[in-house]
Image (cartoon, rainbow, N blue to C red; front, side, top):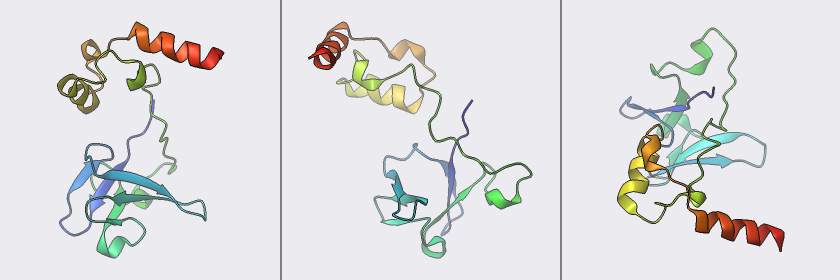
Length: 123
């Protein structure tokens, strides 16, 4: 099970799950810290007073929660890989699958893509 990352917009107080906005990005700094950045307005968690903060689903800072503050950013969709999907070039099906990865009927293996990847690895 993985933990979802939530980000709070400090200007209007809205909370959203990371990855649901096409402008979401994570930036790894030279000091090893990980920051959120909105690519549309170029603000993020590095300067929370003018941008965003990491938070819980309810909008509280992670420091206010009772357990450990460990976030798994790997996710648990390891079986689904867009590069192997038959519909990766069909915008409507691909965007629907990305919005709701639990719809298993949208993901279908592409045998040609799998064979091409296998050949590239075995070269």
